[in-house]
Image (cartoon, rainbow, N blue to C red; front, side, top):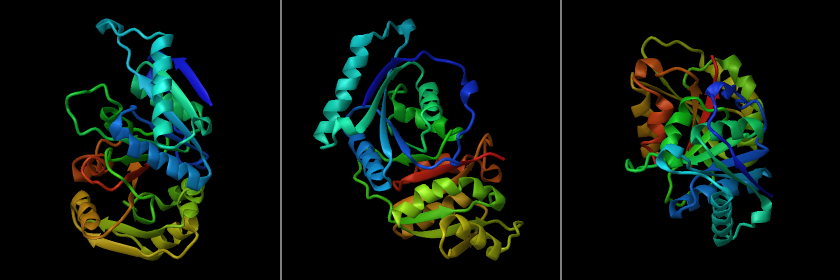
Length: 288
């Protein structure tokens, strides 16, 4: 099932949120078709198969008329064929994948695709190269700032296991807000049948009732929750240390939308983790 569309850049007004209030029936992989994208697509295909979800692969063809980059049907068809050939090399039947080829502003296209196709989870790779700012991986940081749906960040060029041992970081988000994400957890974590550990880094002035936290997470995870706490004024370093000393296949971070910093920690925790750890990072958007 394929679709080819030429979509021009539009305003960012469409960035209303589908959040994680919908189940994971569709998984979007936004990536270039290249050698390093294979683990990203394979990861998305593995999750889609495990969760019985549709897999959508989005290939964005760069276009900039100012630089003589004009898009025609030949360009779009080449993008489609590149995806089909890549899927066949990975022994993935193209007939079982929704293939989309879009031309225009990449950030705008990713956000619109998520919203208009009811995507429950978006998977992106990250670029370690500073040379090519047109690559989708270079856009990952922008999408992290305001993701329309849960976003998984994958390290390209690395073979990854599907999540079986997951670190969930609470981050002090409003416990009542967790109920809005129940459909996502029902469709993702509970279907994975993975082991999970709830982890929270508290600072000196923070007060919370651990029983209330465990009860709130039990409501969305449907099992008894173990809460491990650590005390530090640097949440990022504590989580990174936790990931380096124990084996986890994924870390889940609740991300406050439109907050430039997880404020006292001097920058977006989600972005710092996504670009500094090899472990896949799942970002759950929270609107305060």
